[in-house]
Length: 231
Image (tube, rainbow, N blue to C red; front, side, top):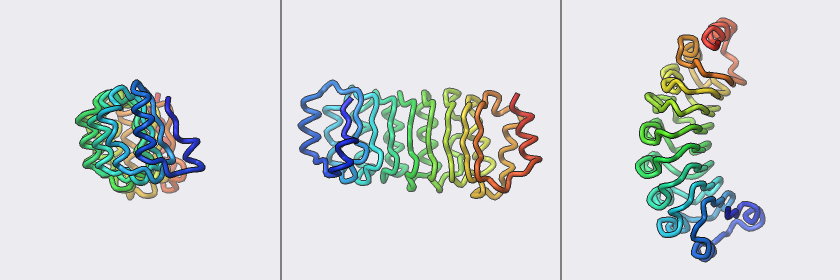
């Protein structure tokens, strides 16, 4: 694994030239972390189509300069990706669509704080990346959850804290039938929190952990109904 994270704590200016030299030297990399390289431009990822064909894990947390252009480079060069973290990256639905068309082996995707994505981009991922096991979309406040309708049964772990989830969106999240861990803190964003009642009618038979911390409008009746659907 090539990890720039510790270096980036003292120097955020990891240049494209530095990255080129390292990727040219280590051409069989399977894991790469550029997390914290806040000034890394899309141009830095343009090297991946040539040098990233064996990457299975890529972390780009807090790479604020990475946009859809950079994500398209990831998509075209890293078809074997299993783990991808885009925490706080500046990507949109267009980048997610490109990713969903090429990285079909994705199992773990972090989109938390990617504030520009919508249900459209999530739908592209959930429909095309059918091996997806875990996805994190916390603080993506344009998301209602509707993009998960018809998601794969392989999806077992979902973190959607502080999203604007709607009742139909929660039902969509549960539609694959495989969810075991669901975190939906602060459902006060949702005007009808009784959407959680979908758990009580057989949509979440495998659910083991449910976190709705800070969801102050959820009452005892809702909790009792949820409990009936979680054997």
